[in-house]
Length: 144
Image 1 (cartoon, rainbow, N blue to C red):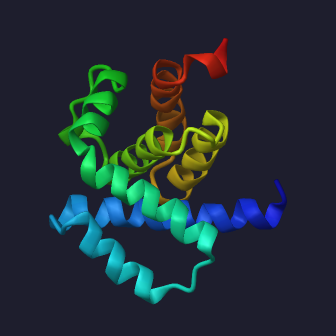
Image 2: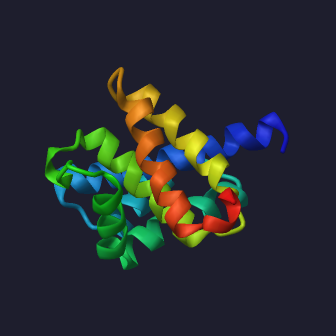
């Protein structure tokens, strides 16, 4: 994968994170938030499809995403997680579910970088630990 593709996909993942974050804080419907945000950004087809897939998975499978997150975030109720960490985790879990062709390690590494950029000092390490548990449960074949 070229650095250009990685950077382009990171932008798409950051947009998915922003949609998840906005909806979490404001209660906006995911699809409406994504439609508004998409209008503000010039995106390639690849970026749009990646973000569409993540937002659609979050919209249609929110309960499953949250149950998966809750199971992996041992001893951390969802409402006690920092909003940025919760949004990063939700978007990454949705991507793991919706895009099986993307290696889990790529999804995890990108989520860690987004968490470091938008979260606290501890966010990257926390996101890494939670997503490692999630990815091993959702995609055990990639870790054997």
